[in-house]
Image: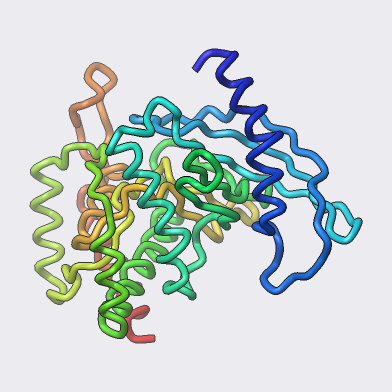
Length: 303
């Protein structure tokens, strides 16, 4: 996008989009009857590194007055690029994420490891839009140190295991609702590293050593990698993780998410050819991590 297009979008966000969202009470607590007034918003473009960037992403500092008292909101605003409104894959990505925030999480009540969503809409505001809380403003940091270490990786496995297990429980207890979700998912190809043969073999062996129900179909993130994680720390130790980028959600085996996160962090690439895997880091750890995931998965199923 050129500077004029960015300026036009910022004007749209500032003068049309956010004021309308505010007056639709999207930032109010449920049941609130306070008088609300849009005060101001400062918006800047946010550069996100993505293989396929279908979104225009902006960071905003929004002030709303509740019965005269000003309150600051830090938000991330995602808009589908104007020239991609007729692109099936781009529109499908937005539609999947809109369904995740508007419908799926209402049934996953005990799973809260995602950014708070203020609005997700495909057309009411003129353009497909998703407005989320800015995780950095509440202390989370996007991981930028290369491969995840043991503490980070285990934290991620615990949370994705919960998400998978919640789907299995929903399928058992509210099958019609679960079927409604997976029937409406738009299948999007994930930009995954080709899984090396040795990793596939290790995965097959590890999964063969645990009960068969680990492969039960459930809702999966679809592109569960380091680019979609933000961590909260206590004295340099990760204590919580938020998962975002739910636009490629899939109805499939949990193995797809495990392959993605393990591939992303147990492999190293050559500098000469970044699309080929040169060596394997701690390949023996794969079974350990899958068993760790499985324990978290079963614990959640049994709650």
